[in-house]
Amino acid sequence: MTETTDSQLIREATSIFIRLRDHPQDPDLLSERDRFLAGGEAHRKAYTQMLAAWQVTGQAKKDKPSRAPLVALAMACLVGGFFAKAPLEIYLRADLTTDTAPRITRLESGDRATLDGTTALIDHTSDDIRQVEILRGAAFFDVRPDGRPFVVTSGELTVEVLGTSFEVGAFEDAGIVTVAEGAVRVTMGAQSWQLSPGEQLIWSAETGVTRDHVGIAHVASWRDDVLVADGLSFAQIAEILDRRIPGRVILTDAALGQQTIVGRFDLNDAQGTLNLLAKLTGARVTSVPNLAYFVRR
Amino acid sequence: MTAEQTTDDPLTCYISERRALISLAQSVVGSTHIAEELVQDSWLRWTSKSYAKEHARPTLMRIVKNLAIDWHRRRRVEFEAIEAQRLMQEDAPDSERMLIGKQRLELVIAALQTLPPRTLMAFRFSRIENLTLREIGTRLGVSESRACQLVADAMVCIVAALEKGA
Image (cartoon, rainbow over all chains, first blue to last red; front, side, top):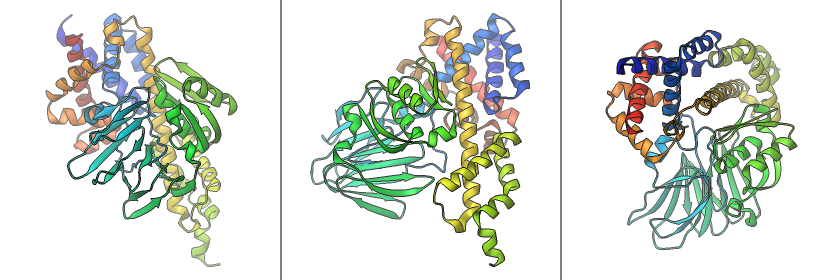
């Protein structure tokens, strides 16, 4: 088989795949794909190669213009890999990344940071300022005074540390900042808020900003492999679990995603926790190991 | 009660704007049936949260749009994950099963750098920014089918690079 024929098959496979991706239920496209795959071994191989390349290039969920932010501070952080564990773009930009296991590390400035699984940071620290950008995931920072300000940014949110330790996390359309010790100032656009120990600020695209009190012991509880959910939605918890599970966690039921969950869960066994939550809410989990976990009712 | 206040009553607004809400949802999801369900959901969402009553129309519009985008995105993720199962079913060589690795990423990045700018943009819009072919066409000022060709060109290049490195 010539190079040209191979390329032509890849081209056809891609064309079918990306049009189907826009219209996954289009019967004409589905039968076009099935006819293509029935075309023989070379066709199937081309489709598989195309899919593998699509996987490698990762799917970065990212920057729709409307999208927001992140936050965090002393306590908890979330961000989510609803779509992709390892978006190419994030890998390309990040200075520090984790796989599905959390890790304690030192920043450029010498400050200690604990990163949750599937987290990516850029360290912009210079002689004048200590600055970290969270691309995804959650991080807990333990900051020593050294004369330079310490600033964490995520999306539109900026968290400036006035005290010592805090956590920042980002969800797909929301951010959470929680303070364990000291104080921080959170800025988003023209607005700003100062948070003290035990205070938590939650931003979401839908409901705006809310402030709340949480127990200090619960700040960034993921560091101890525990998830303390107090009013988080199933969708937000799914994002947290997704960080610890190889493969994507996908909720296919919007109403289920909005359901509020209260409880204390084990992150050591994130898959077990996902199954448990599904059971509690009358949902079921269909898994394709290491690739995807579908949660539906 | 003045006419203006009547318009602002959320339920009245929901009922009178129902057609507009459905057609908004439909423009995203492409199905009237699904659009009607999403509009139904939007009312549930409205009643479950305390939105400002005076902004009922724009808020409902936003809720419907978000629900529709969300729906579409989930179908898309689901589709991709289901298609990805083929990788496990096919008797593919190990190199194709090892989906992500640093070396492979490097090969891909090197390959992407050889692409003409428009092809690269089309690929980026599709893969990284998750735009639909229609949206890519609009951004690049080309037809949907031309946008599809550009993305396919990029994939041919990436597959070739991965094969060479395998």
